[in-house]
Image (cartoon, rainbow, N blue to C red; front, side, top):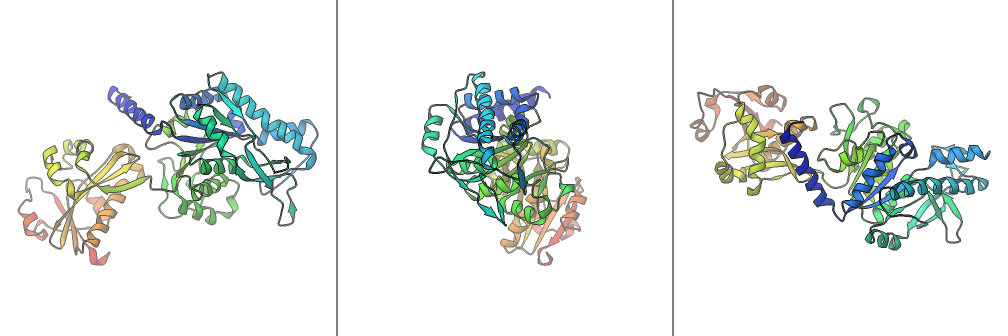
Length: 438
């Protein structure tokens, strides 16, 4: 990383620090992640979030610890569809394990100078009998007593929720920490919900995918809308346990959480990388539009010039000055990721014809398909404007425009006004797309 890249990274981190100060994050951590060699660093990262002014609520998973304690005391149990059937005699040991994990986490945070409290803020009820199976003392979350939790956050204390809830008579139930984290996030209107799991993400090659899913360069699912997440679950009924966190994430989004991030906690620093980066490193399920194309504003001129500059130097784009862009920005649209601009493109109208021009993308996000999304958007805008034909001039992107349905033409086919400004010295190829034909 060169000096300029360091500077850009620092700017990005400060941008997110300002943005998230005072926000609330709910973090569910798998037990195995808390046992990993780098677990102290994960705790330190969580402490850094609290020290940066971010409210943090923790939900530690305890499944494997419950297994250990029950085996140690000779308590047997069964599971149905990945859900523990909790017999009466197991409950004291389940509580022991759940509070043991939570207390260890509280102790680790104390070592980082962070005040934390383990509490009994969860009202639960019996899961009951499902498909003829009695789940005994396994329960589900009924509600969370949020008032004391909010007070703790106000006092800069980290609440820690064990995976146990109590009914109105004080009877304890073993509850899902994944479900609990989603419920808490919805009730406190959390900015983000994180599931820190103990394995890599979701490989596209292992699943049937709905249309439009964004993948990383390595072939893992990068982000899903709630609708895509629900379609993914329907298309892969045999992968229910593998996709459990996606199911919980989509339910949390439906309950009001904007963004849920599923991260491989076995990667050192993964939480900070996800929070303090526009692109992130895990799988995100989102309710609102994380990626958006909007009309360019005058204040976007410096950012758009930064995008265009490498392509201008390479001769791909015609030179444009800041003054030119200020005069023409009404023709441009930008692709924005979490407040930063990563792509741009323009639509110039000549009567019933339009020109797609000024397409530029940040090279670090090529794998997100921003160019295709922008071009498709401009084509749609042209149709909405009642245009009959689109054209584009290019010296080095012929294959791209052919993929987008454009056909090679000649300068003579350009509208007269645009033909007069054609530069023979550039010898740009002219591509056209008949909008009536799709």
